[in-house]
Image (cartoon, rainbow, N blue to C red; front, side):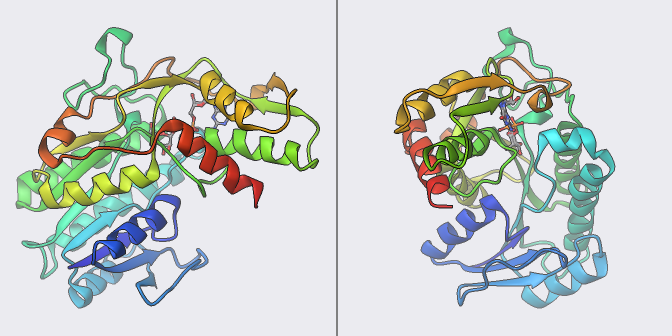
Length: 315
Ligand code: GDD
């Protein structure tokens, strides 16, 4: 079984590639020409490919003829999307459109299963009495990132309904793990704690909104869901990928601080880390995914956070 991962050098892609390899897949990847290729082992071959060029994508699909495409390429930061809307729409909407158009015109149109990756941000302004968020919850995206991913979900359904393509869309909630870049909360907090421990920073940690409650799942569990969904999910379907448990950022910070060897760290709120709009409570319902694929996440939040902190300790 041949799998193609777009955005193959990203945080989730590396975990997905290694999971697929362990399951016996032949794994191929694509990355933007301008991105450095961080790994290119015997197992995963990474192609420099501009997803904005339909001709290039079509050529690759017709040559490689993958059985599965995991479309991970895109702009993944909610915060950055407020500052760079055109890039967010180009990266998330136009590249997906191009990929799906290329699949439609390729020799693998009828066989290949395509997973498009959306986000819980697509739901946007959800009231607390609508929690947990199910796939049927109305989409009211607020951030430019959420709007771009909601559009991707509509494109996925459009290509399934109009061209019978085997497209499945997922809406992961917050996924975390060692190696996630800065700009995401657990990395931002853990890196500062690691630097305080090693004496690089004074014992003072800068944070954004600690009151927000989010639904965290370890990336190593998330990628297992991706593999199950492309095999057992319904075409044209949408699946939440989440843990069903809201945890406040304050609680995440407390857990990380408790794991630190440093006993007194001062916490200060930094305005630049606040967002124009930030939902107070956000958690999802993964019943559909669990029923249809028997997915069961196994890594606890404590274990995830410990691994993330250890990762930053050795950087
Ligand atoms: N990044 C960051 N840094 N966030 C902070 C900080 C900080 O120092 N302090 C508090 N926060 C709060 C944010 O305001 C937000 O409420 C929450 O922590 C989570 O922020 P992020 O980790 O940046 O994640 P996100 O929710 O904006 O987006 C992530 O989850 C989405 C799914 O819900 C990303 O992984 C997206 O790609 C993903 O789609």
